[in-house]
Length: 122
Image (cartoon, rainbow, N blue to C red; front, side):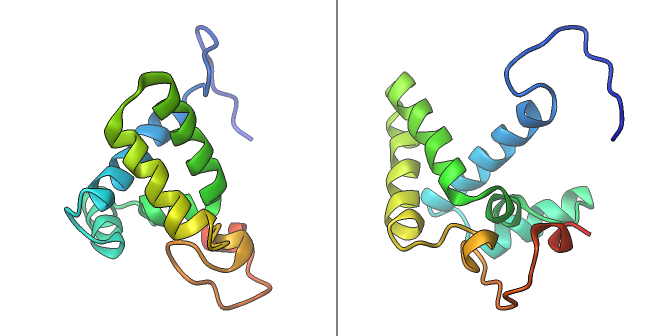
């Protein structure tokens, strides 16, 4: 654990305030057909030096969480693009039980049943 000084509280604190827009941008690029999952992840990793891209992160976070966050945002704002993301996640992942690392499949497949999310992040 690392203590990080905050000047005031806010929902999501620092990490989620940075992470949610990244994950949303990745999903938007995918749903609009700009690029595929692997290309989006690879682009992020090459450009930033990060060990994982947004879709690998989504698989660790869980597609149910991504679905719920996007659904709440779509309902709150009425944003049709956000609604398309919600429909995409539901059709391609939620309805098929592809929830990410926890179920062994999400945007990627995790064939090792003893695989843990912490192993992925090392």
